[in-house]
Length: 179
Image (tube, rainbow, N blue to C red; front, side, top):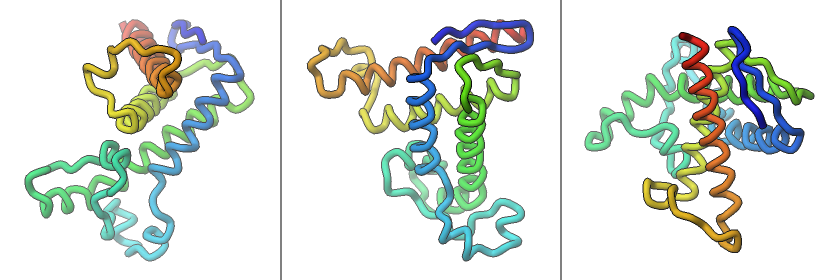
């Protein structure tokens, strides 16, 4: 993969296997972040229209908990109330970013990202890193550890590092593009 600024846009040269990896990860993120269709079907239409999730609950899966954390960890009632007003939007944002990235990569190995697309990619990569980092229990110590290729988690940590590199590179390109 190669990422370069090009005037107002950022150009990404991406290998087909990288497209496949990112596509698979985007679909997994969609599974995790898409609203529960049963809840959406039984929802109050007015609440849905203004973005209130009347059936919001604290997630039990560690990845969902990381992507949709409690706003007030010491006050479950306040956290639930906050969640009712924010989680739908957070979920929709994650879904829209993943779908945007999938659309950008559709049959492409050269991607030219506009400012809006760049924002979708950076947010998408951030969500992937949060999800994968949660699964790997990444912290400052484990992230910087050298791993042997024989380590069963070696390739997953390499994937995490690749996503980190991609996000950092896109952020730096976006920063220089805006100067």
